[in-house]
Image 1 (tube, rainbow, N blue to C red):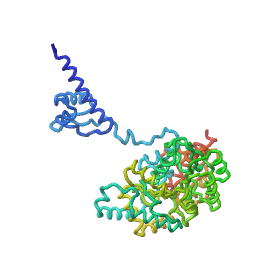
Image 2: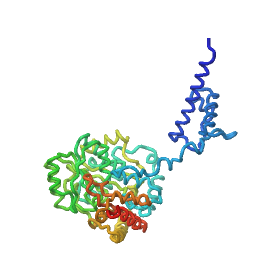
Image 3: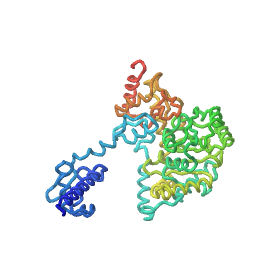
Image 4: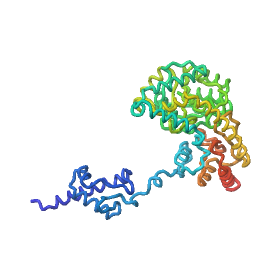
Amino acid sequence: MNDGRQDFSAKGARTLDVMRAIRRKIANRALGPGDRLPSIRNFAKTMQVSPSTVVEAYDRLAADGVIRAKRGSGFYVSTTALPPLALAEDLPQTERAVDPFWVSRQSLDADPATVKPGCGWLPADWMPQEDLRRALRSVSRGEGAVLSDYGSTRGSIALRRLLMGRFADEGIGISPEQLMLAGSGTQAVDLVCRCLLRPGDTVLVDDPCYFNFRALLRAHQVKVVGVPYTRSGPDITSFQATLAAERPRLYLTNSALHNPTGATLSANTAHRLLNEAAAHDLIIVEDDIFADFEPEPSIRLAALDGLNRVIRIGSFSKTLSASVRCGYIAARPDWIADLVDLQVATSFGGPSPVAAQMISGVLASGSYRKHMEGLRRRLAGARQKAIDNLHSIGIEPWLMPRGGFYLWCQLPDGCDSADVARASLAQGVVLAPGNVFSVSQTATGFMRFNVAHCDDPIVTDVLQQSLERCAPSSR
């Protein structure tokens, strides 16, 4: 005989299920403070329970202060149920280690008021915003397919034709089968790594190198080996010894305006590097993202090699927009065929047609050349001003770059750049300490500065205070 206790227990369990479902929505931020809960009738259907069960669950959540009732309107998430997202999740994680992700975390998640001489992009008002708006309006008036369809597997034909013309200007004859677009320069590097590397392979990088190379390669579970970088390129003696000892599969580098040092590869070093690569069956990935900042083009590995064992990667995120992202890969036809298939498998198609068409619109208009001429002039002035300001507090450039927006600088003797970066971050200034770029962790006394973000007087003031606080004599 059923005395009703089993039914009562089942109803109580269903009530708890409804309460848990609402709490999960709040914890996952599907419902935020002030949001209206689903109506009792609709949520009862969703949960496959009676409306009275939902009423009881809502009443109990209201008693707990999780939600509140508004007469004649429904139930709403309490404003105290969960801290606002900006406070709970978006603050920079300042206590984490100063590793290859450190600068990215601090720069990308920083409050808009934070000064970022350690970041890797130009200020928004330095970019051709009117040209981008014009290109966006043109896209919005164009074919509806551009706004709603997937991109083709190799990307926009118009942009690829423009890129082929740029390669021709360098003396590189490239066929359509040797070029594809990607979602960004970073995605292009990732695709190449996915295609050519396996966990446990060895990859050669410059020391120092772009910190996100280190972060990305860590994700691919490969062995990363660094070669000292000089003012004319990688140290060839060390390069030769490392190839013989480690047998790396791939070498990842910048040729033009090397990141972070700003150095330029010499012709002699480039030829010797390619000879060694051929002798040891080494693939080279040449990230050419800073090429357009050069006043005059320097030597390129892809041009010397003819895209045989060199893969060229680039994008326009540094020169046009980090928001409208589109990268490219130029390589042997067989590698491109595999990379296209891989991009389809991981992204289902090429990059955003909207982004590709906007970029091709700016490039084709002729305004891009004028924009870059203006940028180079403006950066030359900013570079000299940054050098003067840094010199006044004992920080000196390792070399004078031919262009671009980076300065690789040496701090006063005994100063640890990681300590300086932490102290400066506490005062609202994001810096890029040397060892985030160094595989061997031998860049303790170096710092990379973005000259376009060094104009604010607070940079020099905070740096000076941090240097004094972190100097050996003050410890």
